[in-house]
Image (cartoon, rainbow, N blue to C red; front, side, top):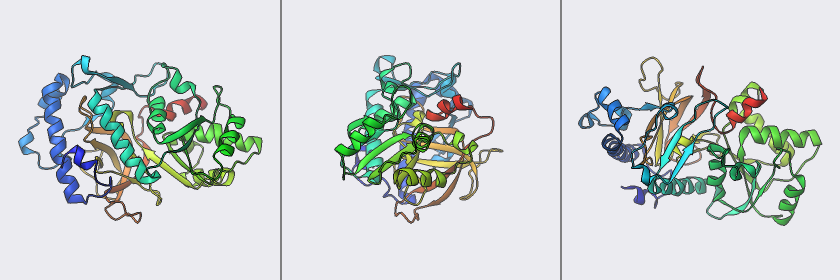
Length: 360
């Protein structure tokens, strides 16, 4: 089954055996493609003694640390074919990842994102309230993972309104006008976790204002590092938003600019899910062997989308736990997992973790 055929079926519909077969075939093909097209990657695979004929399962494919994209330009297409260069967020003076996309990879990322997210939101586009400020996508100096996240998820919205002004204050007039205009309709909200907490929830609390977002579905990601330091759990985050806004349909997601498109959405049971286009593996720090389900380890993410850069098998800087596979009560097949947080001594990075550092 090729990528186009996968787009025709539900994104959480394959059982373990079939998904492993498809991912192994596709990821081996990508490994060979990047060996042939990217000299730096070819040297790495040569150094580890890669032999594709001996690979029986994608668990055995060599991975590279995600931090390499901060240190090297890894590209598998001619520079003339680069359609877009994505960068991760970084604090001043901090190195950022650079991800080179050709039109095929960029297009597949968007198609995959649509397929995954609409499984949770439905296919209809909804009026959209973005809990951020409009300068993020206007200012090219700021346009990195944060701006890309807003633009990426904006394809699910209509009549988009920003909830914050350029000074990161709530624009209550704009929010109330938006809610009045779309009264009784299902609305989509999107933002980065820390910004929702710091600039939306806390400001409403400070102003002693409550607004009715009970018809809303919120998608948010990143920024848990700062909230954990404030002793705010996911459960409390949800409860506080319910108390102030009536929001109850809330979905976190896990993703990174190095594998844009293959997001891991949180289901109604509070678990992050891997779609048919990607997977997660947890590995032990001492020898990178594969963890058992329920055992905490370093998260490896694999994706069939990266055609223009060798980002298909990446070892992240996050720790997580595989909770199970094919048997989540929500009915979605595939692995489901949780992220415990950053590994110790890992750099602060990510869409809103970087921004949150200003408040420490």
